[in-house]
Image (cartoon, rainbow, N blue to C red; front, side, top):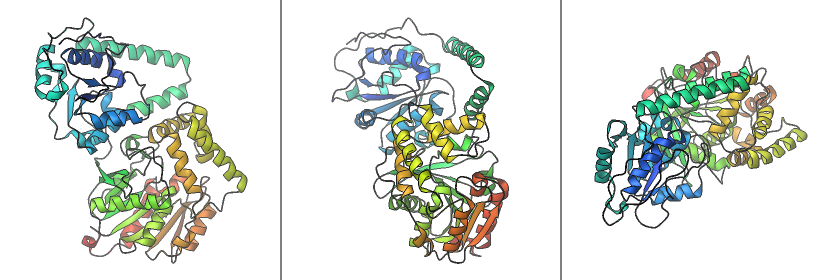
Length: 495
């Protein structure tokens, strides 16, 4: 049967299917709306039941409705393009579908290479090259591969020819011209700092990852999916990153690894990093950020990779979970590095703590809709941001890596923690490294932590908080030298 539809660049061509019969779920970037809506009009007119978001704006967090729609779908259609393959929204949907064993059919709107996370989910999936097919051949292929129950019974009508479809070359030329006009408009309206920061942020994603990484998922004890990444070969080093991280977007962020320390670390070691619960590629909208839950995240990654013994290296807020893990699993940990970390918040005055808690209330409710909430957070947590360009980069990376409720949930749990007694139980060789001019976690907090851990080696390095975490080649080398120094003579014992 023929279903009347409209194919429009701006308006959804039909109402998404919301019944209980078999249907397909459509994943796409809103930059491709015109082309995708034309295709959906073709499919719907051929009787295919389709669920799609009908215009949710880019960057909107997953809703329960999205999760339910993905769970109920018999097939996921992923419209692949340069925009969708770099979209966090699309990657989250594909990872969600992949982890629920959903069949995923990539439909390529253009020739584009998949990034690491998508390649992991789609590497064994047959695809359709939409840009190379006529409407008739495309529909014929689709009707062959779609689940039979997803096509309504009755006679399928003739394939309509949308009057607004443009050729791919013309469409992308027009899109490029429009983008140029928008860019010129922005340049005229905004200051040079903003323009430079956007160029850095959005050009980085097209340059390719500086080092190949392999991404997988581990299930924590409460079912939370934790994303981890591995690079390099050799004795394993598990890095606990802390909070507001992103394995896929962070690796290209100028704030994340601007000096190539990940590549340096991976020359002689197998480096394992993970996004903690609520952040990056791991599950969002988390209820439990307790210390035990975050230790469970480490345990899940260790179990998923079958690690027997390894070096544990924690940065900043990751230090407390690492201390708890090392105290509970001394048989697993060859060495422990605590970089720019603290055992508790005894160094902060009550007024500062109360102001921080009030700031978290603002972040929880206004993170998505008020830039002022993120700016307030940056001012309190990142006092060393040097200029307007760097501040805009940090602001955008925080948007990508976290949402307000998860960020607030993490820090509310974190503020109440004191791992001093656990630090006193550490029995493995430990390096405590801190930067002289750290304004986020002051030097005195690092000195106190070093005094708690039995026989800890304490090293002070120049610079601020990032330098103390090992974010420069110089400080990262200090950490790697310590890891190698205390490693077993038989490297196989750490595999």
